[in-house]
Image (cartoon, rainbow, N blue to C red; front, side):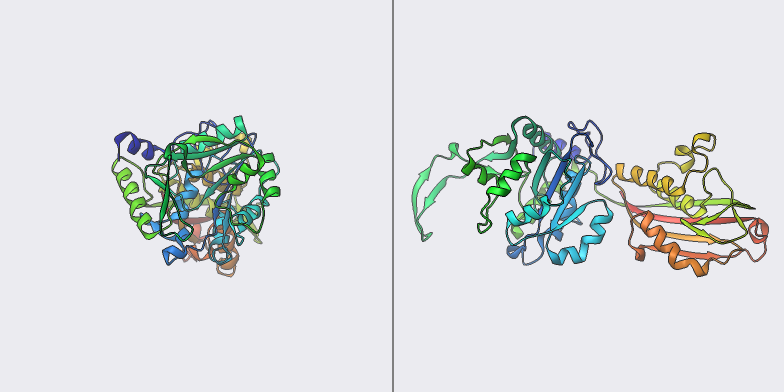
Length: 418
């Protein structure tokens, strides 16, 4: 791989957006609202040539579709992932928890596109359509395609053909004519459209046809398509051989400093004094008790400990840095708002929460009866499956301020990939 390309690929996952002017964040947290940009990722193919579901085949230890989604993350106001009904059942809820919309694939590409388009926000004026099986797409290419679509209505990435091109006989056995390859190009995705043009494509499409891409419908409408120069790294993973090629590109790029996710861990601790006249809020749940936790916020000792554990896992300080107790304007702030801020910080670092383990130390009230609702709350607040959240409680056997019912302590451990 040429050194300049390796350097470009190493930067493509975290470079600032030339369109939004901001550093990319996770889907659902990034994008520029005023731009009105949406991305539809078509990932409903059966993968018959792969003898497996290619969208979730692992490339360099991560499912291929996650690499594709990462490339678009933060550049668009929303991402719509079009999946087969089987994959929606398996991965739909997890995908939506990440802030990505999910749509059901149709029998053909155009029907899948229509399904994805039905989920696009009415505010979107530029829409990118991309193949889920192109995980190596360069973020700079995406931005250039978006820019050209804004100027010209339509843009399509393409590369020059390298092989000699022959027209073959109807039976596929004979070559009958050599074509001038200089007059042809291999078209890729993302194909970007102004909204009104994509709507025209959908209305014009013959739903009985299986189009290889939606831009070919524009040929019937005499609408010119602006070509954006792409590269040969933006391959479509279709056959087992393509997996070998894709991983080779990625591993070469890894040597030039591309950052791959790795497991990280953080520890959090918090303690709040109990006083009468305050509501007792633990893990987002208001619990009936004669005393509550006092603090600059609502005193939710569990959310605070979890937030510190998560920040610690990516070496991003602790919540007091972002919500200083000296700031009177945030007095009484909800701990859910603190958690949302922490999630945004993690998203900016491309950190994915894997598991949260919490131990509450309290003499009163009894926490065990609330285990189920507290687990549910934490899973929802931090966008995790409930099976990835553990909550347990211990007492201090009457020892110290906690044992005397004067305070509640919480310890938390969080694991992430970043």
